[in-house]
Structures are given as C-alpha cells and as structure tokens.
Length: 206
Length: 131
Image (tube, rainbow over all chains, first blue to last red; front, side, top):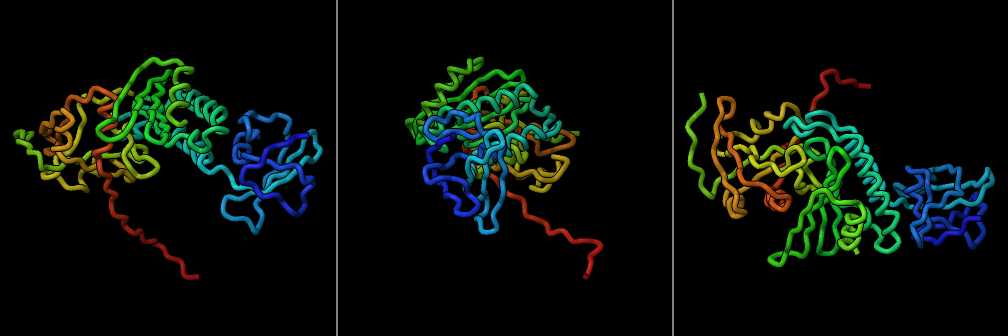
C-alpha cells in the first residue's frame, strides 16, 4: 500500500476508495511523466502502474482528479492542483524541442537530441532531489534554445542565479551570478561535469 | 552602395531583433539573445534607430512574431563594448556591438535591453459567416 505525505491536496469525497490515512502528492508530475513522487524525499514511486486523470466539473482551472491503481487494484483517489511551474517547464521543453532551423532569424540550428536529453535529465534530477527541500525553486526560471543547437536553462534563488548552457553534444557550461547591485559577482566555466553543476544549482536555490 | 559610416553618440538608440525564444517567461530578455553558435557573439548585429523604422527592423526577420530589443548606446558603452556603424547596401542602419566575449557580458546586455512589443494588428476574416 502506498502512503504519501499530503502537500496542498484536497481529499476527494466522492468515488474515493481512500481511507482517512491515505493521500497523494505531486501529481502534476504523474500527468506527464507517468510517475508519482513521495513528498518527503522526492523519490519516485514505482508501484503505481496505472492511473486515470479526470477533470471534475467543479474543479478550478488545472485542478484534476487522479485515480490510482496498483496491479489493477484501486489504491486511492485525490483531487489535486498540479504543480504548475513544473508543468510549464515540461511544456516549454517540448516547445524548445520543436523549434525549427533559423528559429532566431540568424540561421541557428534547432536544439540537438543530445542537448534535449541532457536538459531533461538535468531538470528531472534537480527537481527530484531538491523539491522536498526548496519547493518550486527546484524548477528552472527559464528554458530556451541556444544558438548553434544547444539549450540554456536558468535557476534563480533569493539573490543568486545560474545560467546552464548545454551544448549540442550534451556537455555543460555555466554562468554563476552571486549577489545583487554593486556587490554582484560573475563566475563562468565550460566543460563542467554534471555533479559539479548539480552542486552549484543546489547552492543557488537553497 | 553602402552609405558612409556615421558617428554614433551616447544618447542614441539601437534596435536588436529578438525571436520569441529570446524572451524570458516574465517578458525580459534572455542572455541567449547575445550568443551565437553557443558562444558570446563578438560582433552583435543591431540597427541604429535614427536610420531605420521599427517596422523595418522587424521585417528583416522574414516572418512575424519577433520583438524589438531597445538599447541605449550609453549603456552598451558603459559595459566596455564598442558600438560601430557598419552600413550595408541592404541595410544602411546596420551597426555592430563589438567586444562581447563572456557569458557575463551577454547577461548584462540582456539586462539593459528593453523589450518593445509590436502593436497587434487586428485580423479581419475575408469570408465572414453570419449564422
């Protein structure tokens, strides 16, 4: 039986096989990625193998109802308010993936498959490992194609920010911006390994 | 034949054509607008505002949906960059910003770029239906 920590969810009162002790969280991820994550740890929950998403007539915009099954057996249902910033990021990634040649009017190639894959992996890794501690700051502020076939992703914290460049072969570079105003400093580097990058993003948003 | 290069003073305005993917979700300019082939663009093409029209600067994109980035020459020079008029036969207003060699510079250029949204021209249906 799956037991999750509720995060801003309302329990469904109709057609719900849930007991009072069960609730579900972060369902927006499951809408697109077919995954549920445990709120406390951000760890993917693989036992959920089937789900059905419905929009109740009384729901607010973007509010959905999710019915979960394990091995074909209903385990719960919940109404939810999707994690909209992550939804937007994933939709944005799809948009970036579909830009064509000369998207910038200066003759740039569209993002390469390697850049798309690296961006997707990086976003998922960071959301998965940081959501429980920093919430929606784990989600990038922006995601955009980069001239020449790469992708640029930016995370923002309270006073710091980091621009991550992913080149067409999937390798990373970054610009780290620390502080604001006259005290602001810049640090930049190319050919960065993913663990170093993840550590930097974590520091920026924490 | 190209016109003679003109002197450009600090109070003048430059236009940078921005693709929809050069804008952040909050409508500000992303630093990717000043990168070429994944690197800082060392010679950024812009238009000198007094020698062109906003509409002409946008038409050079070849398709709709683009925005105009607006920069003041003084702000560009304050970053240590050179602004040089480089007219071409096709575009007498063509100007270049030289010396952009770092990601930090791209970021700062983006920050001094105001985005001008072109006016929306209402479309009319040539074959209206009256049900």
